[in-house]
Image (cartoon, rainbow, N blue to C red):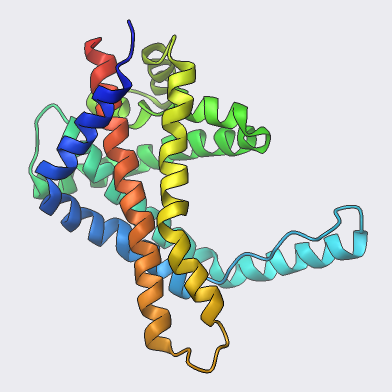
Length: 246
């Protein structure tokens, strides 16, 4: 079966246009607010040392990471949980067999959240490891794009079974899905880049002020939230096409 990539994109765009108000409401509360809070209140992670062979620089970096962790871990954890809850709610709205409304999706998301967190962990960790070599990371991310919709739509589906289901659905489409995996990654960076550049340029400038910084943070978070919602809709559209074989 040949995957119609253009049709997947059309399906995702159609959902975005049809359900704009719903996506703004759910995405604004559970994706935008945590993203903006992270930009505004979480310190940037310490940059890697220039030379990994310098033991003094490496130890200084490890100490800085440990200090960053003590100051930011709880907030990062809370914001991550909120984002995962919002993502799960959107998946329930679009793929749950009972077609719940927003209130129903929120109620269903609470008991399902612990298993979804586990799923997110066992997907994110290997994808991040594979991404050190770029191509393997994109390939694995592409093959796992339908895993969230499949986990929700076909439950009870365990984490390992969801992996197998995702790989079964995407068999024979590896290269196409590598391209799809690039879309949300690039989109988030491209949309947020102007605001990040403005923030860097104004950092420490005489005209810089907290109000301008807050506006730029909200715009940055908004851009990345739009990319996140787009990625979720793309995964849903892809799952539907692969499941139906069209």
